[in-house]
Image (tube, rainbow, N blue to C red; front, side, top):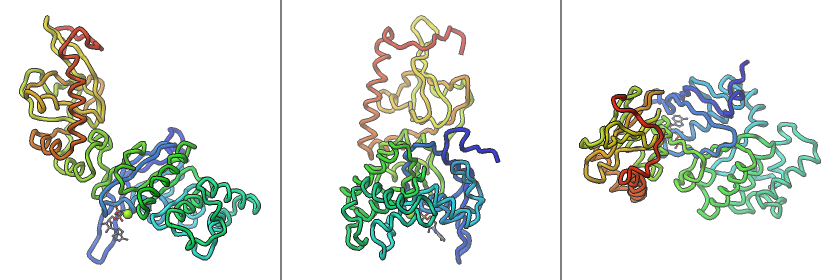
Length: 380
Ligand code: ADP
Ligand code: MG
């Protein structure tokens, strides 16, 4: 078998993943064709409204639930094809799972709970298991409680033990479904710091969370809306919005493709749209006094433009053109949608004001512009 996941650095490769639940009321498609890649060592937050499909998605990674169609490769393993028995063996060695409700076995001590996965998967010698478990409990600051039953410790402590248990077999990937959902914010912060340490030590983590502030601190955010992943560049561009505002944007605007070398907006023209780049690149081009034009900047997916006319005089201060090496995909918000957004989000307003100020400097003084490429007159 060709090991596609290992060739590049992706630990997870998901293609066209679909989950259809059969219910008495008929079929319900909870996941509608997800494509997701995760690189080794990434810390990915999975966010979205309740019922959007986060748990369904995560459960297909752990094998708790099986895909209807599509593929999931983890470290090259085609887990979508695995039988239950293969899945159980694979999961025991490759995956650490943390749930919202800690799910420690109530009749085993803290230490025994952490030892259990090593026993079940027949890993390490008996003495090693105990030593490993104690080391893991030390990592989560729970050695003092090693011989207590779960009922005798707090929720935050139980979650720390659950994390130690998830690490018992040293899995490269940790998947957590709302691990801080049942904890107060101070305890949640501790758990999050623990995850950050794990990522720093080379683990890959996917964490479903309700907490937008925690999500912002991960390397990446996957926003799921009605069973679909919202374009990540859009999420990044509008990271100062909250989830509801983002989903509003997604519902009301559709991406539009522009062929390479197309001018999207023209300097001097009246402008009434705000653009966010999803694919491809654009050049920011200024006309020169003596004729010709000059490229002053290049923008990438996750960047936006067009805000200056909307916030200022209404006149476009530059021409924006798709680069000649690839087509571009953008979303455009009209003036009304744009104004709604900045009225609702102080963070976005502040960010745009800052960007506008930064971008305005080169236009006041052409001599200080960082010139990337001079375009001779006549050439487009
Ligand atoms: P989230 O974790 O984002 O809150 P879920 O993945 O749990 O969302 O659920 C996504 C959608 O799928 C919801 O509409 C939910 O009602 C539905 N769903 C989840 N599990 C089942 C199931 N076993 N049978 C039928 N529908 C389900
Ligand atoms: Mg859920």
